[in-house]
Image 1 (cartoon, chains in turn green, red):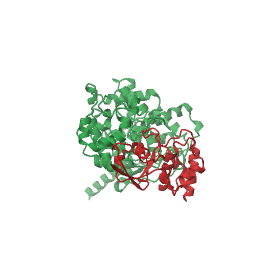
Image 2 (cartoon, each protein chain N blue to C red):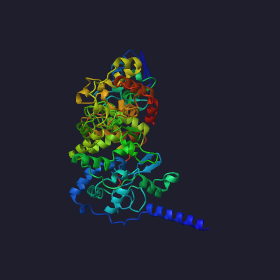
Image 3 (spheres, one colour):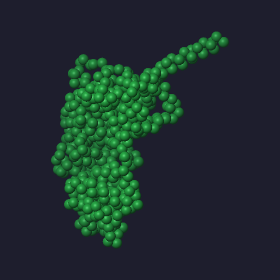
Image 4 (cartoon, rainbow over the protein chains, first blue to last red):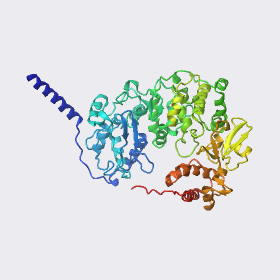
Length: 420
Length: 162
């Protein structure tokens, strides 16, 4: 009997502790602050930070409804609908105080005390500084309120029980600003805060564990996002030419690196956002990311000669050689008009050197938007021009001709997936 | 010899396999609706329909067509009379120099066949890959609207939400 009581008491204590840990109070509503109540220079800083964090990348589903959310993010746990973060009193965050906003960014708790799912990258945003959050809050609260009702996120089974996220936070959330590394330059430290914090680069470039948390032991090892492969940003970088801080800066600022590639997939939006922020921020990010890639193969060896195994490729993929001549060579062959404009040679193209063919296949089928700014050449989408087998052939031809790496084994699957 | 089906008719042409479809249409089949603009898939003047999808014919090696059907501006006319889209472009006088118009009409045709009641925004996004240097965009939009109505649909104006 005494034992039973004891066990019951221990259980009750554990439940109470769990509840205390998982439960968070509601923060009182405020009446939506007037736009004029915010300092304009603070709002301007907030705009830069929103671009550095690419808030719109997830939160803007339709261009006519900026930041009004609604898009489903596909996660291994189900669809997570992106929140409306316009200052609308009923549908957005109009009634959120600065404290409520700060708690959501640092700890992933909504104003009413509900846990957010970590699809919202608060494991990064927790590293934002107070000044950054002040500015971001000022910017968000001065946007146009949009009455967009976002569907409720309902994950299946146990994942639908949000208080469990408290356990996730206990395991994976390292709260608060980052300690300054005094052995490194100011620029490096500034870059680190941006990359690890609001920039949340690891959100796409770091693989996740089975609970959806970024695997810190494999930070920047390369990972999958929305069907694209975000390549490694560390010693495993497959790039043939070294990613220096200068080259990264050019890439992040314009969406095009003359010795690597054009920004594709979700990275296109990132570079378009970064083309509009203060230059010193992009320089700091470049300095930090270049330091992550200091041990990449390309940084440790002599600059390579471009590979062009034309005869081998023609012999192995004769049909693709004709397709390439008719569809690709006009822009990509050395000497073509487009190559006079500082485009990267295919031999330097990072996607061709990745271990999987997904990015190459997707770029062929979906094309590339013009780099930062509306004007400039685009790569047309070939999904409607070429059938699946023809895309496979071209991908195999490019891999054979412009790299000395083994043939891909996943091309068929990559084409089928991109076709969906 | 390469066999291709254009506007419902089979043709045989003796060309290199990497010859762009555009060259075959214009030089071998005397179908001059599609225009050579940039030759790089950047302007849309050469747009044709391949299995009902709008593509730049300058990027299409003719040998890659296989059994897929090609339709050109000429195919949008029946019995010598313009179909709804060419007729609407004429009625709205949507051409200034006219170089882009064949591509515009063909691309718009693909949209209206697939979606008879697009929104204004959908029309604009759909036509975005095709360039017009004269600046007749507003007339082109009016022509697409007129054609959509003539085809029993229409272009929806979606009021922006507050």
